[in-house]
Length: 378
Image 1 (cartoon, rainbow, N blue to C red):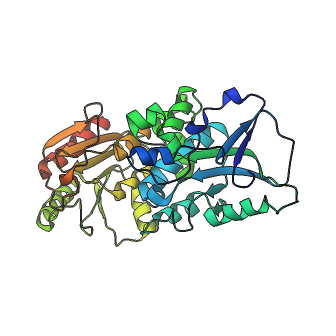
Image 2: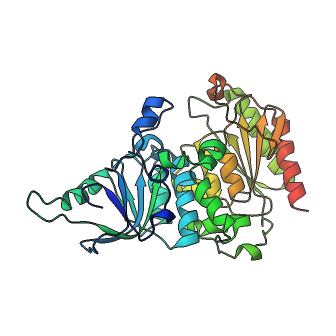
Image 3: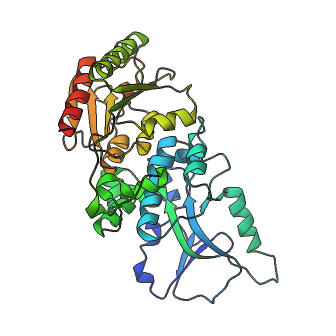
């Protein structure tokens, strides 16, 4: 990198995608022609050269995240999408990376503090640099008039750019998840460990990794049902009366079956939330950030996510992530249960999606969980 421009040094430029498939100007993304044009890269962002005189002014290796805070400051998009994809690519290609992000110092942090908690716990040796650090690196390569330009040399660099990812057919037209492109690429080449159980993700939460052809999903030692409450939020929640009915039904199921039951609430510590998720068999809740905890669930034959929507609403966030980790995903519209491949093809987040008076048939939720566990434990 010199003066803020990335130079791809290669003897064969044909092995690299088009520039627009690798990088953008890094602006926030909106669904307008003007904004799409503004996010198209220029030679100021990235150039490809056949040869460049060998320079070693600064040797670096790692991940460069070219993304505004628009999605970075969200637990799901940061952990279960961005780092989900980064881990899939590095696991299939290299080793643990350092990190450099082109966003402001608070741009990648979420309000509950879960992003920082995840990053420092899962990657304790990782060094985070933000937009200010990147600008200082730019300044170091531009010493001034009459001086020789300097460069930062990245022998190995994983460049991730949300806008560029959405220009691919798999992300832009099918999944809308930037993690899907690297995951599919590595799966097709059989370069991931434990694909069927999400084993490539297991190093992040400390579970033993096995080759994909050796994976035998275990039965859970104990069935643990965890319900994620959104009652402290202002949208996508039950009425307080209906919440009490749903909670009572889930508690009754666990008591009748001798299972463990937990309710995750926003006032619980981050440590407690992760600890509970790490032993959960079935995660239940209305569509929302708390379902991102599914990335810490242990892979078992009975692992599942039961996601409740206000009809006709639907979103693929947790459906895609659950299936990528080998879990079953159920979507419930009051008393209608759907699972892949019979879930809606397209997202529907219309006016009623964020209702503060969502209702679900408690009996349907209980039966879905009970039938799922019975089938998987056979």
